[in-house]
Length: 364
Image 1 (cartoon, rainbow, N blue to C red):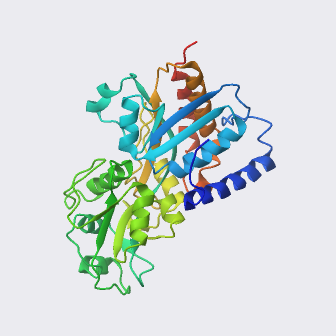
Image 2: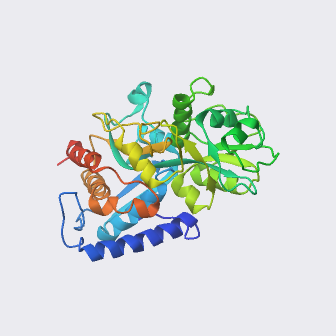
Image 3: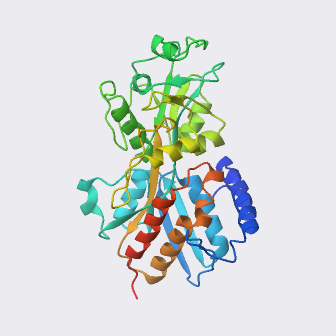
């Protein structure tokens, strides 16, 4: 199972999620039958310990999924350490972990670094990246990509700047300095947030897009999405990019973002679902739901994947990993998404990911 502090707000929420889903599954009788959607509820006879690291964006979902899976497969222990997408990818390269969580794809130049050979992408859930803020007296805020770009690269320095005021008529914006909060480590959330700015504000955004960028001097950093959320919550005048699950868990305020259709859309799971529906899925199951079309599509929607080696070298670990992914991609696992504040996969992508399970090579 996953070892985590019981005082963590995300863990407390995870416990509520598990109770809610357990009730739902009991009502549906899904513990006694499987379906075409891939419900995996039978216990496995495999005994193994799996280690993973990486994306903090997906961590709350992973916590709920790992615990629910362990409840049905007591012989399998799964540890997920977080640390950011960059760390997950690096750990998988050296085979320090059995799987990694990542919200960004592997660069072609880095593929030779993966000692175990070909890697497979398994999408799990998706969700909004919020622009969360802490400004006393401002409970609603609307921002376009151009304005967000100017804020995060240090061009807009106060909350009552004319560019912000123009998008928020009637809002009493204070003459308060803006404090930028960003991720401290290599992060898929950073990659997707800056990808949005690169795409939606190409003539304004100058800092590029990657797991790390050179933020303006005077900005603050936080470790993981939870660290950014904590820094924003504790700093009057702060603004940061935080996954929806952590933003909700931390009680943060977040802006409505102008989408490709010209509508200001609040970050919601339905908005993320609309963005997923408009995405093109590549053969390797990577996709980009950022800045997709759709009147209600939330424009900063992040994908996230579990990645692993196609060729497994340990029979028990390979079997356990496949069993876990079968659970995550089945109806029981996907039922955990919404209660944990993530968007479940569309059925078409869910089925594609289930089909790809057959590519995992497990030794006899």
